[in-house]
Length: 317
Length: 171
Image 1 (cartoon, chains in turn yellow, brown):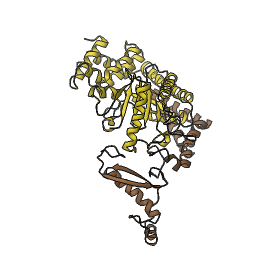
Image 2 (cartoon, rainbow over the protein chains, first blue to last red):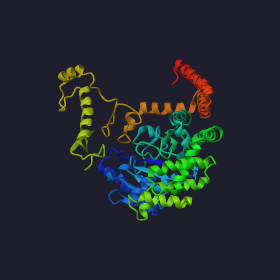
Image 3 (cartoon, each protein chain N blue to C red):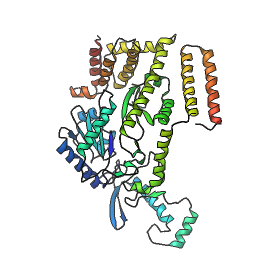
């Protein structure tokens, strides 16, 4: 993700209405001219289905409906997107599931190059770099992140201590993803660089990858100790129970599903549950409601449709 | 119309500011308007001006002396009028010119973070941090294996390490 603001306009969220509308006009005119494959969404005309899908993918803030001068431009599949006036004037994003952060960083730079308006430069200062509405975020404006599944570190309450180490050594932060009523049932976390001041893209990517390697190693060590070295393996039982419930359940709320998916995936990683990692990663997509809403379900029937698809994926009864 | 500051409540107050002859208008809700008014009131008192904007040096300076807590904000952007007292993750800039208002402190904050990242921990601190983390994992392993005697020894070693770190003033 790249953060950008226009030099001559006031920043979000203190913007004047006129500046907000001008920011949106400029950006969307560039999008229509240079990236016509991007579909544009406005808060006032956004359908419930699109809202659910885009929020599940983390492309829209929760307050998007109230940001009357905001907009979102995204391609099919939402791998490239551009959020307008949702904090910064522009948030340019690229995403995929390959984990190739350097390629994603180059992709977001390429999208920025396509959308640059020479007559309307971005807010930039020789000393601080590209300016943000949050001064501590000034710099190159690049934010690189990975989603990580950390059930062992979460279970053993090691996330906080690990976060301090990541901050000191790699200047990265580790935030919980997908909180449901204050809980993190899926043990999913987003690892990303905390700032971009005076840092090159390659350095940012390298440090995030090193931090990810450190976290993965620690998670693997704990998993190995829990599943293969301990005399009692309650976690193995939890993994099998989760697998069993998912194979035969008739109703699964998002929170239920994430919790069970997390335990089942842990078992798959430990080599206990007979599922491939690719399969469990793919099954994460079954957690959101938007895919079922697209198929004609409503909110009340989504848990039942989810259970149906999970049973089908696991070939349960 | 929504408040331009909080973007949540309805705007029912119009603020007009004049900066170098240019008039800027902002629409705000009552709460945000009161917050801004308090900020501007502090500026006026520090400058010896009345709330109405009329200069009453003797009376206002006396009042300012009686109320030492009414201080000028640390920074004030002359372009958008935004005052700043602190510089942290919650601080929000109103425009590109706000960076000029807080240039020195912001450079200090950003370079301090960059410096701590570049220099990293000292070798001794890193070794101690690694040792601490390793002991914690060994403790977890011992607990999972139900080797509580070993776990107790590890717990004591971790406590000793924490006490030694506290004595040296480390976090």
